[in-house]
Length: 186
Length: 186
Image 1 (cartoon, one colour):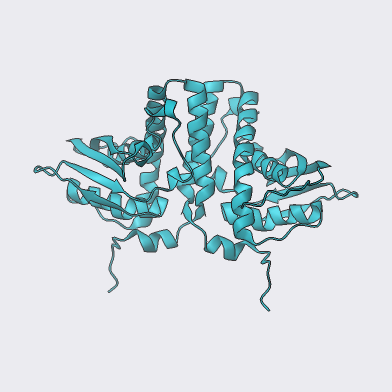
Image 2 (tube, chains in turn red, cyan; image 1 turned 90 degrees about the vertical axis):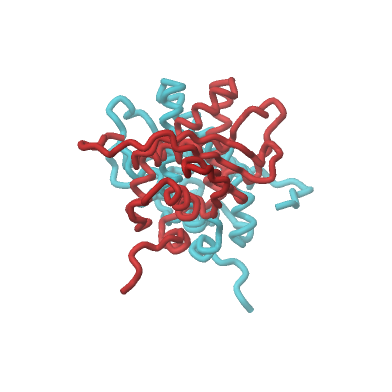
């Protein structure tokens, strides 16, 4: 019998509709630039990117569950692993790793060495407070929300701010028992 | 001898870094929503999308020339053909066709039956004036500008407004003679 749940994103990524990564990178850059122009405050831009990511995450989770063949994760540890190994591969074509687990298994880091969002990007001095990739934290938060995990997602390291990699801390705040009826808008 | 200039985008598209199309679609949707919130006037949103596209186009042309192996086009006819057959395939993974040439060979239509930007999109009644895909017209305008062709790009048909396909009219306004020294990076 064939295995039911492939846990690698590679095979899925190979069989999914895709667009050119540079087009995506430039389009994302255009959003950030637009927000910087419209909102002026870097803090506001961070918030807005996170919110946009959240809205994307709550929809992307459907595609993820439909295409990834991932079965229900038993706990947050497994969930984080699936996000890093399958999710990032499936959507961005890169693999992330999971580290720095706390003893309770409710907080970890997702580390990204390769990040297509930041190709050709350099932050000017006056935007040093910007979390350029904040859309990613929002996506994770949104996707987790839809599988009943309230999480806080924060950047610990950011290669655009001089760190060697991107590191996102994902902290599980509350696991909501699933209730019927599900929210079915958005 | 092997042919020097493959004119199909398929082979190029297969060998290029890509991201998930749905992520791109949702991200693009998030931009449009953001602009509608920030700018309020649909006309302004159309303009802004076009401008964002222009800024993307003037950069994307580099990737295009570097990866596509397309040699210098002899005229606007050939250029339009390359945009439709190679460009759209290479960046969006879809093919477009070129029709409705005028007698002078300076105006044609690029017709798109499949358009990954609009998956899951429906325009609410109050946004009927929106050219949701206006970023595309900007990209074409920007890319043409960088090869010394000033063009006007307008939507003749838009599937989101009830037409059966997307049809972009591309009208060559002026071909600027190239001057030495050529830009020789890229």
